[in-house]
Length: 218
Image 1 (cartoon, rainbow, N blue to C red):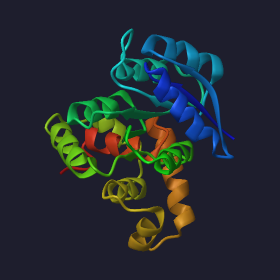
Image 2 (tube, rainbow, N blue to C red; image 1 turned 45 degrees about the vertical axis):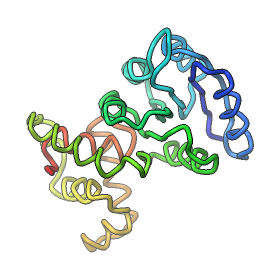
Image 3 (cartoon, one colour; image 1 turned 180 degrees about the horizontal axis):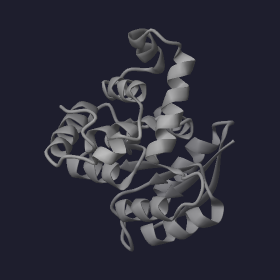
Image 4 (cartoon, one colour; image 1 turned 135 degrees about the vertical axis):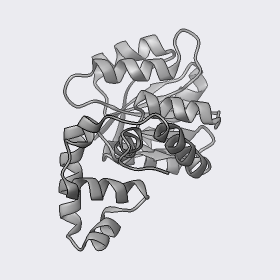
């Protein structure tokens, strides 16, 4: 069962999300609140697998809460799915920088929202398709101008670096395996070790790390 926490300042939005989530047999809503400060306390108390986080809220914004939640987490960190009415790049960049695992808009279809929660719980990050291309391109450009941490890149083997570069191109495990002439299960194992080494929990943040540290350039 996937444990989900809902964070949004509008009660009606939380109620709608709860109905959508609880229609899925494999998802349980374990808590909800209406601001970022309360979200930090809620996550520590109920330990959800995924947090659906609004961005703009009185009493503490979602991006600040995301940073604090992930910074204070011990053991397995929750995946943060930023759900907002705004598709402005600044919010997407802020979510990625804060460590969020995914970003979708509030007008996302119910089935797609449930699918997003499942993907994050399984370690797959995502960004809404409407903003994916321009966001990743611009994020890559910004990061590539700042350099990176050579020591971080040194944590990975050449094979692991090859896999991360292909992952950043949007390839699936099967596509990466075909490109490198290895088994898909081997790709999955390598990615698991990569995420452990660099301290991230999903594929999206692995790509973010790759751009941040110069493993991948635009």
